[in-house]
Length: 183
Image (cartoon, rainbow, N blue to C red; front, top):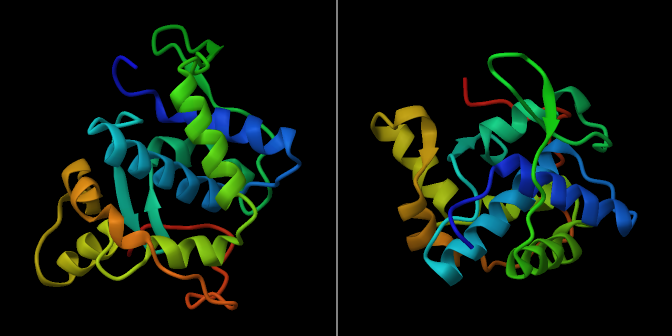
């Protein structure tokens, strides 16, 4: 792979895989799946899967550009796909699909393993003690954290803390229909 992918292209691939398997994915769930795929890829390859950054929002890591691309779906399962927009003409075009076999296999594996887990349980997984989200959210309580960003260096260092058990009932409860940043 040469360089990180547009996160919306990876999100589209996740949605395609989910649709083929009849797995319904909401924006909240998509955010967690994208974050887990990014963290796994970063841990295995020491390079990011997606460009841009994740932020620590109330219900876990969120990639702002992916959030904006699918926000209009609300709490419903996502049926549309993200597109790129030419800034000069405003015309939309399809995003290029990932062709790297390792990336396709990883995304497929993440969707199959985690795609049927409820959003509340995915939030619990993303909130694991010592995880990247936890470190950034905790830091924000005591000092200024620029935009609540979760740096790739923190993801690389702390991602292994996501290996936690999932309770029968989500500790965070099922979140409301729309994840929003901390106020």
